[in-house]
Amino acid sequence: MQLITRDRTFYKSLFALALPIVLQNFISFAVNFADNLMVGRLGDIAVSAVYMGNQFQTVLQMFVLGIDAAMLIIAAQYWGISDTKSVRRIAAMGIRWSVLVGAVISAVVLAFPRFLLRLLTSDSAVVEEGVNYVIFVALSYVFFCASQLLISAMKSVENAKLGFYVSLIALFVNIFLNWVLIFGKFGFPALGVKGAAIATLISRIVEFLIAAVYTFGIDRKLQMKPQDLFKTAPTLRRDFLRNGAPVVAGQMVWAVNMIAYSTIMGHLSPAAITASSVVAQLENLLRVGVFGLSAALGIVTSKTVGAGRFREMKEYAKTAEVIFLGVGLLSSLVIVLLKNPFIGFYDISDEAVTVTRQFFNVLTFTFIGTCWQATCLGGLVKSGGDTGFVFKMDSIFVFGVLLPAGILFLLLGAPAWVVFLCLKCDQILKCIVAFVKINSFNWMKKLTRENLQEE
Image (cartoon, rainbow, N blue to C red):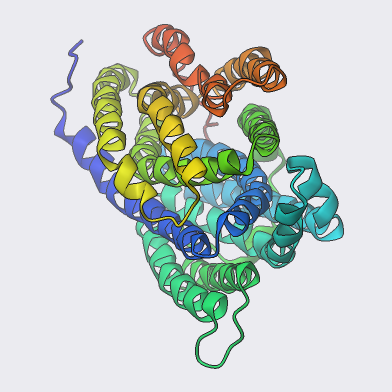
């Protein structure tokens, strides 16, 4: 078995899928960054309020990403055996469940915005400003859920361009409306964080409309129609639940982790909260390329395993390990070079600047592990059919290591950067377990059924 595969088809498929996904991810990041950067001109309280308010969106994303990943893994395997009908049924299930989750979380946030924000931070000024943000952003959740699953349905049949075009249009809409509504242009009042929220809501609606028109009216690859959303397939539903439940559960673990992370950081100083927001932006920027490439790897993996080409998949896996180790080292160098210029974008206090630099020093090392183990586990192990392993491992590290250590050092009054390190240390520790699992190759499992006759 070669360490680096010579199969040009692998590289062609990987990078052909990765390019539009990375561009989509970058544009999605730019939409969020535009909010963060423009609001950053309003001061520490506004930045912290938007950061805390977006934690509910983060929780929603965890659920949706779980449903999305489960749908994509199974659907791409059926695409590997050219069963388009089953792909449509699986995509429809994913869309229905995702929209349901979005509706429930939206209703809860709209009903109890102040109570939920107080769980995340004890700063009353941040809570009040955060309420102005979340009551509008929460209205966008259902549109976000629907558009993300429609885009993912296209990815499952190797059409990754829709997400790029949808996100590109949303970027321009969001940035323009941010400028108009946050700062009060063209006769509109200056709405501050409320304006950022309204701009996000409108851009999410635009995303959904474009994705729906393309999927149901233009696409000829999947040929999905609105009536497909109401068709059932009991056998596929059971397979989806059995194989998808660990994926969704894994995302729920990370949703709990993100809430706990925000709560722990929210009980530090306002400077630490601001630092978390700034560091998260550069980290998310780096994740654009890393996880876009990992998503493309996941599609290639699911299709290859679904087609039963296990020998080729072993070679692909070895090559992927080398690629993502290199990406991790390069990303670490980027953090070192960009941290100070990046901080300069923000009008934040001197104390927040100091804490932000400390957080970036921690991220310089932990992000190498993120690039390698998280991407390989997602793009290989989970996408290859072993959907339960990552869930089990994440549960052990989150509840057995991260949260106990973070809470302990918070209560001991440790410096903010020490608490931050505790909440990031799993990214390095997981590398040992990931290396053993990936190179055992026992994660390659076919999830498809032959000659499926369901309507």
